[in-house]
Image (cartoon, rainbow over all chains, first blue to last red; front, side):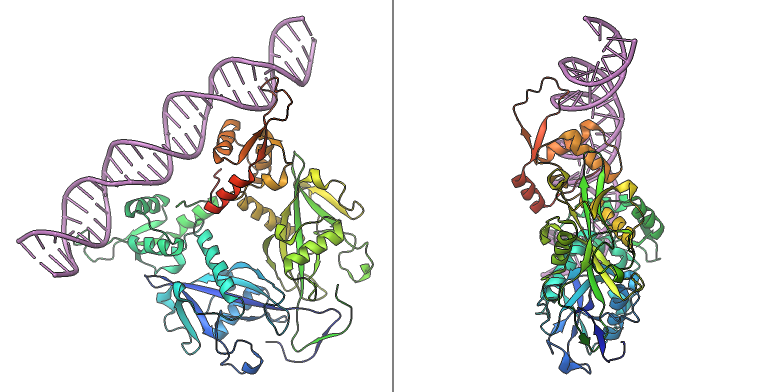
Length: 241
Length: 241
DNA sequence: CTTCTTTGCGTAACAATCACCCAAAGATAG
DNA sequence: CTATCTTTGGGTGATTGTTACGCAAAGAAG
């Protein structure tokens, strides 16, 4: 953070923050990473001490090249989770005049997707915790509004990008993928139609990991074909459900 | 604008602006409203004096309830065009550290659609001018990048919302609507298929304005059915092309 | 050992999309 | 004035995609 001191402007300036909605998936339901506010040094200065909030913090005017860098840096500092700035997707600007009572603060909300299997234990359990999307506590500031907006955005984006890529482990099964889609879109699909649609996209590679598929009861394992996906994304595509 | 004076903060704050990409349609091609920088009082303080730029300006920390209000106010002040804050759609945040050499400035880009037929003469011709999208001069700051992003966003949004609503006059013909879609999506469609698709959506009402349609050469006139459109939007829909 | 569940594969009915033809009449050119 | 071109609307059949199912195999449960 830039040095504390005295900074003078001819006109009033707002403070600018980046907030992060980090989505994960545990095979059952969508989860969001939250932090407990106030345990840090400047607690007295912070509003909503003790309540849950989205990870995030102030733009470092001197150091952060873009606001996505702010998101990346603050997430790392607050939860020990490392995500590149390019892994964040912008949700939007929240700028209501009274959203922070201390001073005028506008925030740029971001979301990102992580594989829960790969970050387990990475996060600082003292301060950060994964919550089920259906079971979110009351959040600081307008963070529940931001969370809703981010999820809406994810729901839209899923039609244009294979989010399974980022939320599932490297190797996964079709039922897993379907469950993920159903969790995000909050609907149910027909097993067979879903499988057909996915296979038809051509971005799934069958994985033969040696385990003999004794019965059809054991689902086939797949991994994403990144090349085909990139090609598909370049041409533009729509998934309809 | 808030009074000029001395404003002190413990940490450096960025300046925050809202920029507006205003799209219009003249029956032939998509147009964008630009302003000539520097004719105003504080010209000496302004960078890019004399060059073209998107309308926009600084968030008034004391008066603007949201950043959309900034967009609305600045557009009015600079071009005399009145648009409600809710008529702006957010494109995104542009925050590169060196995008303004004078101080750290981040901007929230917005776009809006207007009926050219209804705003003709409304704009201040001294400072503002409509440019063909294919014929944009070099712009101040990163405004050409912002313009491209806004157009990309419009191109995406057209699949989910009938933009004709906002760009065409109240009463219009199918060829006009098709031409608009072709201008935005930069493709050509088959006349009959386009007509079928549009009619099938159920948001077009035939208008009988008395003029006898002597031949089929005279296109049928339509207006949008706002009720059906709202209903459609509520249920969610996709237009595929 | 019987029944239920889960998985994969397949298919017939329905709907949507695409690439065309046709007729009517204004516009244009001689 | 007439022949030709252009623009509009109303169609239609082939292809493609979507949807709602049935079926068999085999683990899981009782």
